[in-house]
Length: 184
Image 1 (tube, helix red, strand yellow):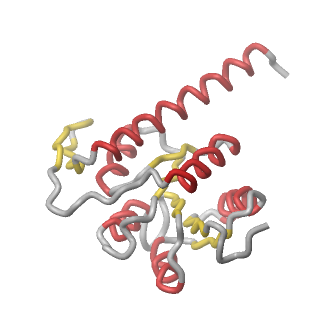
Image 2 (cartoon, one colour):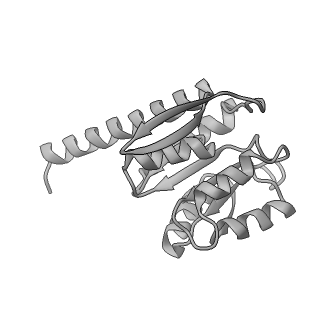
C-alpha cells in the first residue's frame, strides 16, 4: 500500500451527507485519499491547505454551487489543471451546457455506477487526460431551449464531455436491458 503522500487526493464537494459518505467510502476502498466539503466555499478553503488531484462536485449546493466552484478553479492559474467532475441527478441538456461553460471536465449522473465511476477515475489518474487551455481562447455561442450559451472551444474538453455522456447513456441502457431480460 502506498503512503498518503503517494496516493491520489480527491476532494468531494457534496451537500448531501449520505451521497458524500457513499462516494467517499467507494473511493477510499480503492486506495484514494478523500476529503469531503459540503459546498464550494468550504472546498476552496480546503484547497488552500492542500490541492487535490481531482474534484468531484455536486451542482446544486448552498452558498456556492458546483458551476461557480468549477469557474473559480478553472480561472485560477494555480488550480486550473485540476480535473473537475460534475455529479448531477439532472439529465437535462442545459445542465451539460452549463457544465461546459463553467469548464467542467466530465459529468457523472446520479445514481452513479460504482464500476464506471472507478474505471473513469483510474483512467484520469493514470493517463492525465486533462490539459489547460490558454487564455484568449475562442468561444462557441449556441442556443438551447431559448437560452444563449458561450462554450470555450476546447475540443478535447468537448470531446471528453460528449464521449463521457454517451458512455454513461450506453452503460445505463445496457443495465436496463439486462434488468428487462432478468427481472427479479
